[in-house]
Image (cartoon, rainbow, N blue to C red):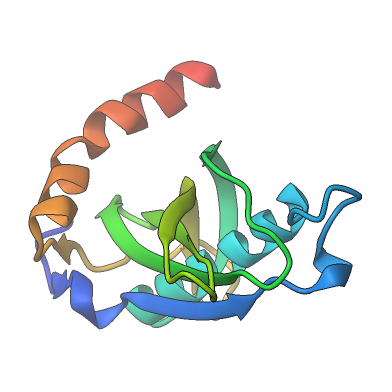
Length: 156
């Protein structure tokens, strides 16, 4: 973790709400995985930009786990946080929750880890502040980040 100018995870936490509409779904009436991936990439970029105060690029989508489907009419809530940082990179955790508008029942639809890299005005990677996890879940993600990074590097 970059300890200089570290900032709370609350600074960059981002929450978006989306409605699952018919054009977003397949022949079974469930949302396309690619639509979810697009939402995840967008919220991860916003979160990383808020944290680094720079433009960012997606370096990798490290893990996406589709846990349950979302159907037409469902309400999606996406929440993203900076789980950990490197010198110029940020690991972003995104959770997508599905809510049935009729029953109010909520289920986790998708979880994902992405690596975003901050770019300076010259277009080159630029240092980012460290992150200070606040909640127990954020602390757990922060503490397990080095193991995820090790696995990412082994895949290269």
